[in-house]
Image (cartoon, rainbow, N blue to C red):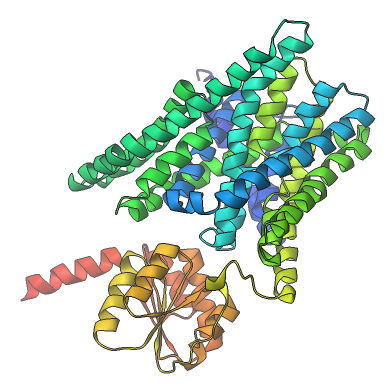
Length: 544
């Protein structure tokens, strides 16, 4: 048998297989699967015995995950949303970066590192992971809330700041090496960088806003789902790569603006559905790649330094963010959510510290401290969010998010409609025309606006929550219609609805026979499968 040298296939196979096994074990132990993904990276990394995956390849695969993730965020984040949070996101992010950088420089001073090393180290600790943040917001169904938009806008500002930092670090390294770099030269570099970013944003808003939706509509009219899916991936990855090479912005930032522009198209929901499967797979590889870079001996050789770095990430900069948000007049719940969102570090941290090491600005120990802090903070971040969720109700409603206050419906013998997307909106509009009382449960801003326009009462929140279902009065409802396309989420909703009302009729949708069986088992009275219904409708016509 010939020997195959396939590092790419080996890295993907080992990474995904181990991530699946350890992620499943973590889930079984009621721990976030992310912990399993990170441990999978440690197992296939160079610091543990056995198989060693290709680190550069794993890092590039992880970057694709970041691109697709930020593209998906952009699909739900309009320019209006971005501008609406600029008042807090811009000064907040800059202030939080400054505080965290100062704390990191202080820790570096205690470790005996020079000032330049401390500044780079502090910057690496100051910026949160986009992947972790979006996952956390999506899991809690708050990505489309005011809190979620502020958190995402905050990270966009951080990304822009890191783009600038990545340009200035080589200049700083030249100065530290004794090179003659005048202040005017540094200012020129900064202005050029800002000009490139501004040109990219202008091109996306003026040209991309016309070209990208046109491409999507043209592809949709071809009738080929394969071509439509390919167009989504080509735009997401192509714009991100082109932006990085031409304008020196990050892949994540380029993908975000590509998604934001595509989000103005009527096909944005379909584009989101097509991007999700590949996005989730590569997001897993991101966490595996983080675990691969960690030398576990850092926990034995420098435990106090690790503890100090983790404290800066999870306590210091979160406290700074909390105080800044509160100082701008936002309510306690918003401040706590932003603090929890920033209590971790990720992809930009690794890039920045790697650049610092290649420029001989920081010692190799700095990378181990950053990676250890990243893994610990990523593992603990869900616990931070859980703590925030427990603290928030005790401090009253968030005045900055009036739409999030849960006002129980007074309707009875009504229909509870879960989701107001392509399927839900058709059902809701027809029910409204027939005069049937409807309560819609949704989290998406556009869907909420459409449901209210159609005359429905809306409860904003996660339908899998018993509190939300109680507010929708499922106990007194005649029917519950679950239009959520994702089988696992739909299953949670069906299970909770059945627990709340044993007699209510539950209708749900599914995309496969396995999903139909899953929802039947959990208590759905009728599960509609698209392919099966289409076949039945055609057969009815042929029998006429």
